[in-house]
Image (cartoon, rainbow, N blue to C red; front, side):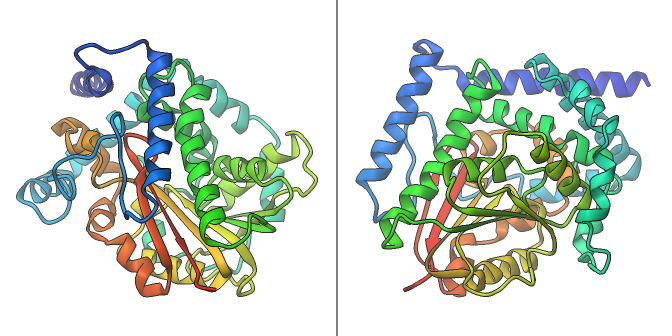
Length: 380
């Protein structure tokens, strides 16, 4: 117990230190003006350089490496993998990770425990029967432990904690934000604008009739897409019926929409949905949880599902993020202990995967200090 407490204290101080260091400069302007100016500069640069494949600006800084040296097939990466494979240490890391993420979120005024309790004590369980596809066969990689849950995403606890975890992610991505709303204004705002700008530029029309969110989790990203394209029919698709049950439960209690979001329990590699039936396919924070073979299959499936001129938008950890490349050893060890396919993700050339699937107009840019949004078009 003493060792666990010590590890938690160490991880917690490292998280706070890392967040602080990421935002510190010699003569830092006031937080609100800095956030606004960074966002405005970012989009001005992107608009001025539409033919480049990558873009970044001051505030959203790329590192000097192709990917973090703690990922892939480096000696450091192999050392971390060996440490994680030692089961007693892995169990300790998993326990420490869970407690640190909860306490760190609550220090940022995210009521993690309260939000989780509210879902677990609700009538969310009644949604499972209407959402679950009992004939679905889960791919082997999906049955791995994820995010310190032994059952991965196939558990009510993971589903109940998904939204506060997502809120915490936004605060880590934008550490200077005073609130989750302000963090999401930048992180989610830049992501959604990247999708809109790409679609307007390359699709030949601004009309969006049908949107698919693959790996929608509890529907946070799906809700942003539905808000941005209110006249479109939006579908959220995920492998976890528990996540989808929470998404459907919360959607029923939210503001009514002209076109209610449709929730589907299916595999993103083989959705069973009709070909050429969507204008936009979005995949947010999914690929770092997938082996390369699944990434390839999902990209190919997205190409099949999109209409000519349709837009694919991928958002995930950026291998070129300066912040991710400079994570402290304790933080990247902690991250890798809860993400079994992180190395495969960082070794996968996502742009080349999209190119081989048939996509054109492939563009990548940092839409916040940690995450990259890659957009592409199905040829017309």
